[in-house]
Image (cartoon, rainbow over all chains, first blue to last red; front, side, top):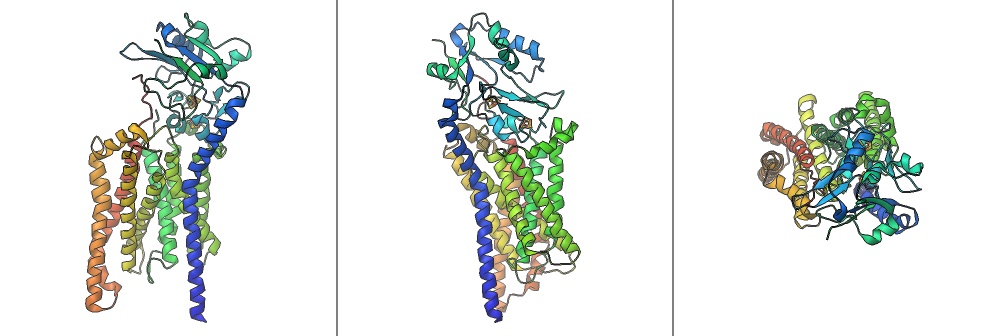
Length: 219
Length: 304
Ligand code: SF4
Ligand code: SF4
């Protein structure tokens, strides 16, 4: 009797142990699968059906006046070391004016635990709600373009919101409006993506987040 | 780029340590650590408080959340965020671990479902500490499915060490089962293999050049001294050698005396074992810190 009982007990233990191991394997491997699967689904459907606006930057037209950066700072009063828009330059004379790219697959929104990010269905703008943000910093690691920054004063993240309030009243974003040579423009990504992408000069692969921005390199 | 530093590293370490301590006591209770054991209680007792303290530390790393703590409750909201999963897993684990400890304190047998639930949540906690980093595509060095594996093995190892240390100082009944050292030998060996595989994967180029630069920081550059000294020599190879020697000499004893007397081992084990357990924990903490500090973004923010 007693030996019998021991045998069944240990077998049950083995089964339980197996279950435990299975769970751990599932916990560690599943999310990667799930997240990857989610991406492919999005790539195949949402991106093509929903409207997505984006930026276009024509390097050849840019005179590096930095008006776009200045007007953005004046309007939204961000701290200088946590910029919403930057004019990147290298010593070979290349330039790129860049903000948040309102990605089709925003990594920031995926990782933010408090859902501070939302992506508008109507135009694909990614808006960050600073009143929800706990300032955990997870999105700063997730965004490959260094768009979100934690503001010193508030401890909350802030980033470019594509001047959605102005766009809702029919005018364009401030940076685009102020650009004297029309180097920086906006458009529908369906059209823009025919003209280019953002894989340029060491920038991260656009496969990660599907940014809604293209650059037309100077000839 | 991000601002994660010491606090996050210690949080990840404590998460793994508490989870591992729970699992050490769980294994001891199930008889996996030898017939006679004194490891079957203290791991349970400390696991909840350790993980809770780690989670508490995290609050100090929050920018706005520290000033407006009521916002933290929203961290349960986004089911696509691994951090949200972690909040669920950690809260559930802390609760179950406290319940289990409560039963111990009342000297009553906890329902089996509590013990098993705790064990599953402990594994989930340990895995989560690695997943948090592994899903970040913006940091190629972290973005590896071997990251949670390394973290889970390290959690088991550090948890067993902590439980052994505590048992040495706080349990009246002193037993030294060879079995514990054997299990620990297995864990340390597995961790070395997992870590080697982690670096091999990076140097195979599958995660790109930035991940390699991060790896270089650890192996040959700015972080190489803590990496080789604190993690590899003190935290891994030292304990590995010690447990190996112990297993060897134990075999000899077995051959000569023909009987596995645990008291015999305790004489030689003593201080060495304690040092070893301490070293394993130093290695575990170093591992978390190094992984956090070696994070390089996929793009450094400048035009090449
Ligand atoms: S650029 Fe960064 S912050 Fe902006 S939507 Fe993409 S991932 Fe999010
Ligand atoms: S820092 Fe704020 S916006 Fe970024 S992930 Fe954390 S809570 Fe979300």
